[in-house]
Image (tube, rainbow, N blue to C red; front, side, top):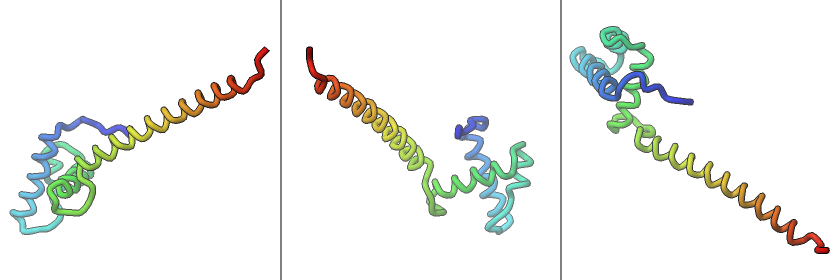
Length: 105
């Protein structure tokens, strides 16, 4: 699944700070997504996801941070490449072993 880069990280950061400010001003621990999203012209559910990840990255909530997730993705990509290389080497090894086992004329 490809991530959309429709909104720059700076805008996401600003939107999350606005939600946090909205909550602080109203002494609330939830809400504010619809109002802030309406002001910025984004969907409230997008803002909710950004805010959740922002809290995880800030250490306010448990979860996998953006940096950790990027590292996991990089390692998974590397594992996939290594598995593909191993499959190619196994096939080549089997091919050459069969060539060596053939009787010579």
